[in-house]
Image (cartoon, rainbow, N blue to C red; front, side):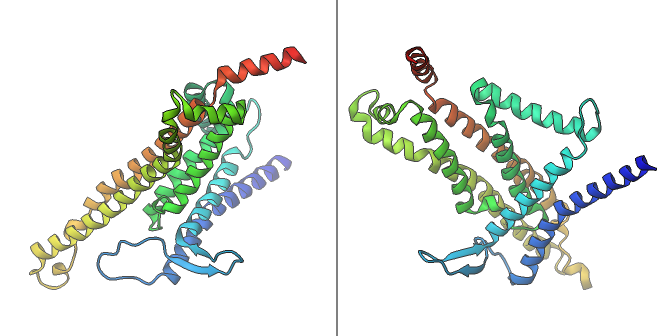
Length: 297
């Protein structure tokens, strides 16, 4: 009886976690349906602003991108709870094997690209991969993809830039400042521009690729609608208005623009994060100073 009761409780918790994964996305879709008016024709606009909060310094707009990003975050949280629910040592279930495989892949990716010193970055890199990929894939259910908003991606890039600067400062402020004057002091302006260009390039690369895919998909869908009306517009009744060319073709295009491109850009952003952080850290100098400090103590 106790075993059956435990099994029932386990299944109930599983069901609740699955529901909590879906609810945030459903609520985001409902908000879009209820508060965003349906337009006619081609509309390529930014994220819809639901409301604006009055703040002391500057007003805070609550946009579609922020709401959808929060929905994706909550869904990922409950996905992780679902994947780790019931994991026990030496107990191998399909879920446990899949979760272990994902963790091993992320840790292997971090070790290969950053080295053993940065193994603690594995959860951060995994979070970036999931957040970026799921944000882009949210467009498959009709939501505005948060990665199509410049502010969202810029926030991620600024966070990565802070990490880069933190590791550059590991050897002290003077060592960091001196790096701007290498190989010669005349390179100071160019090195400063290169430092600022890092988060800018990460932002524009990710944002531009996702947004361009969205724009191309909308334009192609509109062109297929026009072609369908041109070819079949003279057919009688409902056949004349039915969008024949929009059946199947947009779905094939979506495999690339929404699915493949979204996952690819998530992988690229994660790889750039690992590359910039690991190469910015003066490992040899830091270890040398650490060794001297231990000897002096």
